[in-house]
Image (cartoon, rainbow, N blue to C red):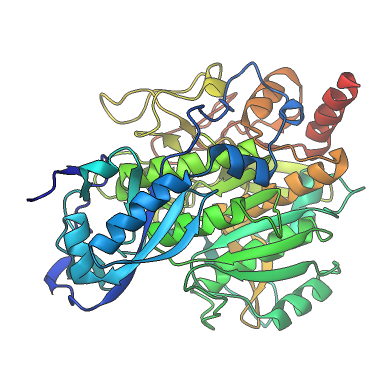
Length: 536
């Protein structure tokens, strides 16, 4: 008797634009899939986004162990999944109760039968991939238990958000406007705290390719006169620290992230989580960092992403749940908002925002063009160098609707897309991102200048590490507090009121180019300290 099967909502896939069907995938090809299970708790996670809770340090954060015990997967559900796997000739790999994930291993043929799919091979200008169309199916007895299935399709899911200006004459050179900065110089312009260095904190960095060379990092930090932080690579799944040697490849992303975060918070430990660039690998990297009971990062920086339209609904929901879990455990997640303006690189004539920056449970980081010297900013505008040079991402989410409560008073504009519903506004804050006013870094033995919102995520991650050290406790999910503080504290952020990213224009207050603006690190820290003092 054929068992009744159900589809997993939001699991539908279509081929990549421009992909050409080659034929069926090799039935004997081995692969892994990741199943996301429901929480054992019938109590929902705390509503971190509510506006009344504007003091991040007042929220009682759960330890990672407490979270796993309260909100992890039920071992009984895992047993049901294991029985299903054995029935279809699949093996059971890693089980992570806290992350609510179970990895199954088997052949293409076995996966086709287990999940009601027909895996195919596709050619695409960006590379071949194994894919599927339509929805994923599971037996009816697993309905409600299995919430998502990742890894059947292994298309590249995200891109790094960096823009290059290459070296000239063997050293860091001025851009066409005559400006490039060391990360510490940017931090000084934004008045970052100078009495702390991140000691005792761990910054997690998610990478989906490339790698770093320790010798390059040693040289870089010596060149810029900064203490070299303790840096370690964490392999997730089958991914490793593998430098490509290509300055234009993913190494630039990896090195930019490490060097910016490390220069801002040299006393912090930096854990670089290398994962596969698929929806399954990216999720596994994120959850590994969030639930890491060894390194325990208090802030996680992500500089990879893609247009919401390129993600499945099940993926965006699963990632957002992971970020909500991070907030419950006091972990701040900073995410680059993209480098292709309001279209996010999609050529359909509509506006798009980048995910995971559009998750309401992350700090989405937009980009500016910053001019200044010493501690004085002379000019700061929206980063927009045009179609070829890049522009900060930002806009109104089409998936996360309605807007989160903390944006209730932000006066969000309507979406640039006709008939679209009000949604989460992106970004939340901003920082220097224009490669014309970019960051002096070292990649694959070369000194170069790099920009992009990829630089802003680790820039803010470093600032959060400084705050955490200063307060002696993690600030965790910052957004409600930041929005309230920007509204109530004069000068806590630098409001960017000039420029556009295509469909959206800067204006006083929040805008869909630079969010609330850029940081005055000292004033923001003062607001945090003042609130802590008022509690005692």
